[in-house]
Amino acid sequence: MSAEHTLAIVRLQTAQHAAALKIARALPQWFTVGGVRQLQADLEQHSGFVALFDKEPRGFLTWTPDADALRLSWMGVHPAHHRQGIGRHLVLSLAEEACRRGIKRVLVDTLGDSVDYPPYAATRRFYRALGFRDHQRTFQPDNPECKENLTLLLRLPWTD
Ligand SMILES: CC(C)(COP(=O)(O)OP(=O)(O)OC[C@H]1O[C@@H](n2cnc3c(N)ncnc32)[C@H](O)[C@@H]1OP(=O)(O)O)[C@@H](O)C(=O)NCCC(=O)NCCS
Image (tube, rainbow, N blue to C red; front, side):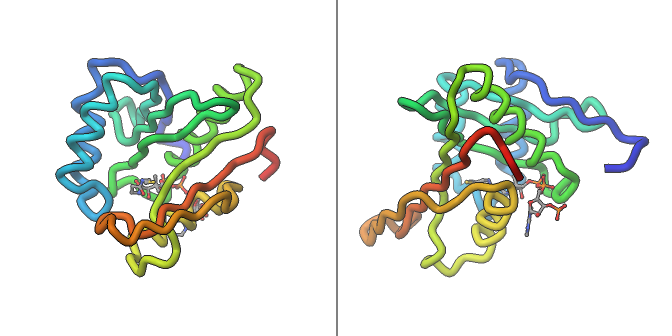
């Protein structure tokens, strides 16, 4: 990100739910209509962060506490702002949240490598570039939207 731009990560408030949904709808290769509907429901229950790029919401991340881990439930960055470090800063904020709570693991579920779908290959490259490692694979042949679920694990403190 160049010096003339600003990036701030803030806690997700109800007033920003519409902006998060708008970002998700701008990412149809990742967010199906059903996915957007589920995100809308989860926004009411999950905690989250919003990335303000030049004061405008351009990315979001939601999470839930899960035993000895924080589970990243949804994230998206507006396609006009990919590869500007917004996703990295959102995950960094989640890692900091985990550290504040004395939690040493962040988990995320995503589409597994055995499914040939380039958009999610990019998603896995993002998580792996940030230090997430493969944790568990679950094959779900009867689930047409996710025939393989891959759980990725980020161990903290973050050393990447
Ligand atoms: C995944 C996503 C959140 C990443 O956000 P982003 O702001 O573009 O990512 P960043 O700029 O912080 O990227 C950090 C690093 O991840 C890697 N990375 C990110 N996107 C990548 C891509 N498309 N291909 C390869 N590597 C990628 C790179 O190493 C990158 O660092 P670099 O740009 O210095 O090389 C964004 O692409 C997105 O919204 N995708 C669609 C929704 C989605 O996949 N959500 C998660 C579902 S589980």
